Amino acid sequence: MKLVSFLRLGEVTFGVEKNHGIIDLGERLKNKMRTKSIIELLNTDLMPLEEDLENLSPDYSFSDITFLPVIPDPGKILCIGLNYEKHRIETKREESGYPTIFARFSDSQVAHNQYLVKPNASDRFDFEGELAVIIGKGGRNIQEKDAMNHIAGYSCYNDGSIRDWQKHTSQFVPGKNFPKTGAFGPGMVLRQSISDYRKLKIQTRLNNEVVQDACLDQLIFDIPRLIAYCSSFNCLSVGDVIVTGTPGGVGDRRDPPLYLKEGDDIEVEISEVGLLKNHVINESSL
Image 1 (tube, rainbow, N blue to C red):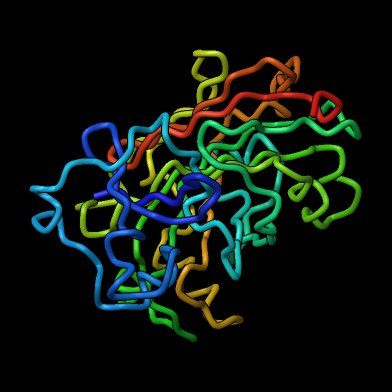
Image 2 (image 1 turned 120 degrees about the horizontal axis):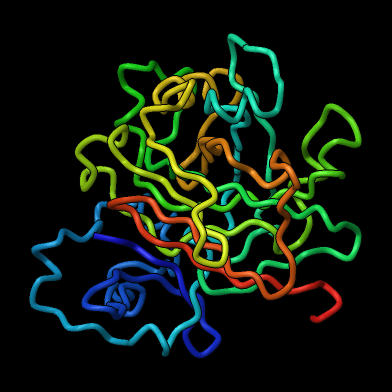
């Protein structure tokens, strides 16, 4: 089962993908709950089961709705850098005993099928295909052995990076937060639907050419370790997002470099999770 957030006739709501369409859970549950968001759904005991949806037909086709980022306004987006060995090596970074963490802000995100925007300030707009983990049960000082039980689900993420701004200092945040440079979606696959996240394959394609190709078992710091570490310095909340890191092959480290430009199509596909597609335009074209 895949949960999605979307706009329908200007109204924010959420639903479930089925048969290339959307079942509008926000509308169907409005008499049981006042929420229109996945975060508030995760905070209730109304999470639908696949068998509950078996006899329902989609309310809308994909063309009837506008996708939103899976969690449109998460309280925290914690991004993990340098979490695949090939990527660490290509960046010439030293090994570390702790995850590299930076923040992305929710208003820097777009959804599936929306434009990614190359800013006027730079021509070094890079792609980073990643697996996003959505927190379904909050907590502080979560133990690694318990960490998987705090996950609501998984989604695809493109942590688009403005490389020259990222390198202004040792802090990554400026290069990671230009408007509409990160993509999140199209939906959230429930954790229980994935038997073993380590077997998932991740691939990024630029104009149908494979530019990143890896498996989630290649993470330097696995997901339980990331949740335990992040919850040690901060209280994780329902709807928070941990973006787990990108494989090797980023455009900035190629010879010659390969950056996103207007007209490009960029895709992040993760087996059993989904396919996130975006088209690139220039800020000046808006």
